[in-house]
Image (cartoon, rainbow, N blue to C red; front, side):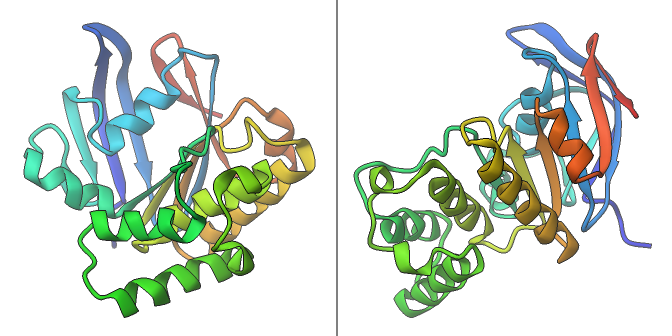
Length: 222
C-alpha cells in the first residue's frame, strides 16, 4: 500500500509562541480532495503553511511527500516545495510582467534550464486551464477568474503531487468560484491531492468531499 502524501500524528503548531493547533492527526492520500473549514484565525492557513515548511512543527510526527517536517533541513525545503502547488486567495501574480513571464519566473526559480522545455510546459499548463490565448496579457488585464486560472496553471507547473488552495474563491463571484472548484476537483480525479480551505459552505454542498473543521485549536472530521 502506498504511503499517504500527508501523515500528521499528534502534531502541534505555534504562531508567535502561541499554540494554533494541537493533537492534529491527518492522513491525505494521492488523488484525494479535502476541505478545511473554520473561522478566521482557527488555524486553516497555519496547517497548510506547515505542509510546505513555512511554519515549524513543534511536536508530533509530520511527514509530507516523504519529508520529515520536524527534522527537515533548510536545503531540502525548496525540493519539498517543488512538489507542492499553492493557490492563494489574492493570486500573488507578479504585476510587472506578462502571464508567460510569471510562469517562466517560477520554472527558472525551481531549477529548469532548457528554454524549449520551459516553453512547452508553460503551453501545456495554460492549455489545461483554458488560458492559452492569454499568455501575453498582463495580470491587470485579466478578470479575477482568469487570474485565478493562471494561479492554478502556476501551481501545476512542476507536476505537484499535492495542491494547497487557501480560500481560492474568496475574491471571485459565485459562478466563477464554482468553475474554479470544479476544476480543482478535476485535478484531484487525475491523481493530484487537493486540500482547500474555504468559508463558502455552499461549495461543499455542490462539490462534496471529505471535510475537516478547525475549531478550539483542534481539527475534527465531519
